[in-house]
Length: 315
Length: 240
Image 1 (spheres, rainbow over the protein chains, first blue to last red):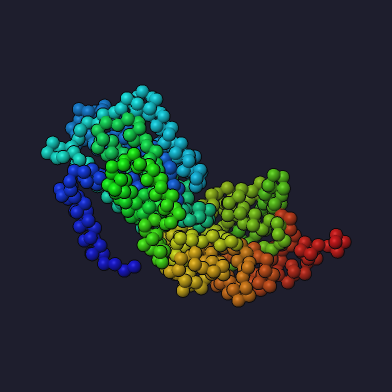
Image 2 (cartoon, helix red, strand yellow):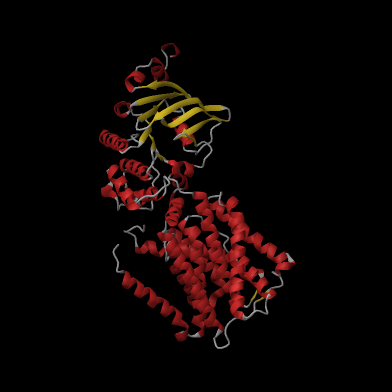
């Protein structure tokens, strides 16, 4: 595929500017929808580094949202006298660090499991995380945790968090793009396709899986920290969510498993459907997600991307 | 110096000896075929050499270095490649990208990934299929892809597991050609093969396994007429 790099760069810059300027034109409701889309897209992209590229579909990534959020909240409350410009970076770094350490510790045993077994084990991890957060007083999961307000006084907090989510999602998109082009990315694809053959060809499968897992966990945790701030107050149930666990898989399935923009398209569509079209029926959110999942697997296993590229298989 | 050395290798599966005290050495630049009846332990032997299975006793040495106990991918980094009998392509990837994975990884050291990939495709005579998805290939073409991907790793030793099984005579002749090309490029080849005419034609040396033991070793015409070998394949007259 020969494309004009200057043209692509121009389109990318234009898209980022339009996205960043979006809240200036959008009514408040759609700023909130935009937040949710960007948050979901970022999570979907982070999930796909492991689930889409390496084929290790996790059913428990909300664990890292929770770990990131609570780690950041606890440390920020501890140092709440710091100025907001330092508090958010402190929270982000702490959240990322905790996700990195925890994912690195569980990576070795849990990545020995394949397919459904890995997915279910991850579900277990997220539930164990939720139980511990709820029941150990130190974490304040049952009581709830307040986050210091960080938005500059001159700025609408909704717009502030919209821009933060946008920054996070763009960062994860950039990392995904770099991974796809790298030797590491090629190794992950070969693991997804046939792990034993990959190893036979010299791909350090164990190490690559662990790195993908930790990167995915850290990026998920970063989005979790921003999300917790945007809520202002969280309990265990607001971050360790099973509907998030499910949605992350649906984003990739909907948009196209293993493709770069698949999770973005999927997250955008799903949020649009559940928040805007079914906006008055929010109780049906999970029902709609489940129904969509079943329809997708039956009708379009390759997702939207697969439908568009029926003839030309994506590389 | 021999490239590959197998010393007293044994593998028991719950007391059943799949490989029993097998020793041999493979000279650099040779084509050696390992033959034997079904269940003789040929594939197990490959699995032991590539580190996919751990032996119960004995060791494998490659370039005078013990490789027993190393992870499969470490052994590949030293220069051992394997082509599977039942082709295991990365189905979602193109033929080019399949081979490129071999070039990106495989033997440690500097490389030109694109050039290595192209050379391997040409060597295996599937350069014209480069843009096809691997899932669109025929059984014969997939075997060539297996060899191309293995060669792209810049391996010094190619272990090919029945590369001619299930191929028609034309395809078999093409595969034999490819294997000769591979050897001409300085790669030592060890085959497991059932197709006797192609084995006799291409090999410098035959090793015969029966019930996990090495029962014959020598040039093809000698081994083919060895009474022990004939007995292993056809049974002894008094046993029948």
